[in-house]
Amino acid sequence: MAAAHTDIPAGVLNVVTTSRTEDAAVLTSHPYVDAVTLTGSTATGRRVMAAAAPTLKRLTLELGGKSPAIILDDADLMAAMPMLAGSICYHAGQGCTNLTRVLVPRSRLDEAVEMAAAIMSQV
Image (cartoon, rainbow, N blue to C red):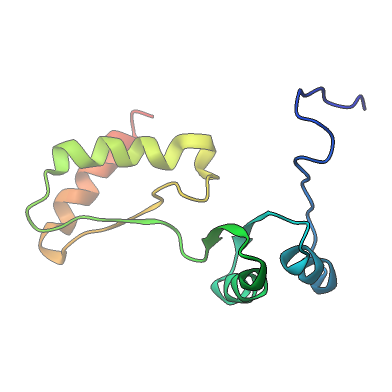
């Protein structure tokens, strides 16, 4: 496999994927590491944040959950539901911040389900 070309100087951006606790500990606490991005559990996010705090690293944490959209009683479903359908389909539903759940008041559940089904049947 050929190496990808980029104009970013070597060493500026490094992507390290690991499940080893020891590796993560070094990356989150080392003074030469300026920023950490984590997609993982809330418990792991807390540990990363605590380890990064002494060196004031920039953090991006995407933790737990499935990114719910919260629909209130007075929401305009005709405006909200098409946007939500687009969000769940973006990147085949694999984006960490895609709105992949919809929480609606029980009084509007049937309306929301009917609308979502009609919209998704067109996708």
